[in-house]
Length: 218
Image (cartoon, rainbow, N blue to C red; front, side, top):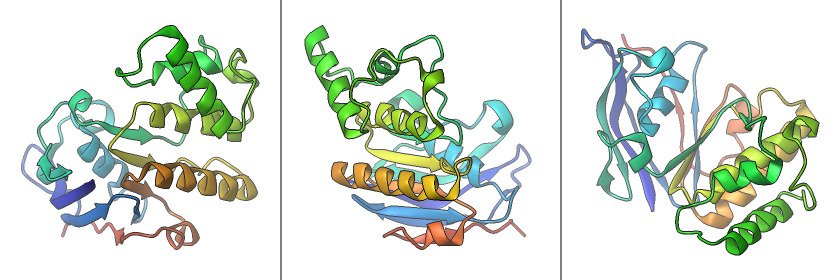
């Protein structure tokens, strides 16, 4: 299981690349890191990997280069066919659903039956140290608790790779360290490649995979 980027960049309709092409191989269980100045295109790079280009702020941009997941070229596959999870700066929990129902929303299609689905959610809550929170309103959770729910929801979908767009940036320093350790432990248990975007050199120093500094295209 690996995530590979081959000469990957994003280009405008006039074929102008936004940043220097990225070459990187993230093996299973590895956590790699993308750094770079604000505005260089770090989030755009994640959108290119996850298949989100063409929507939102990335409207009009296109991929140059290739994305390979487990040696399969997924560059032109739809988002729903890539099996890549993503976490953003905000947890983005559904406010009209309970904590447990938020987690159930992320369950992989192979988990069928009410009893089995409930068991999977309860296990995820236990792993997140949130046992008994199934019926809680997400709005009543702390920032760190919401982040843990968002991570477990992403992992319940059984992604083959995970993208992290500065998911700790809005947490205080102590909580950021706790959440980072929790996230790294959970993803390494599942032995999947992870790509983290961060501004923090100290955070980049904690990863066990390659670190790439994104450069503006000249």
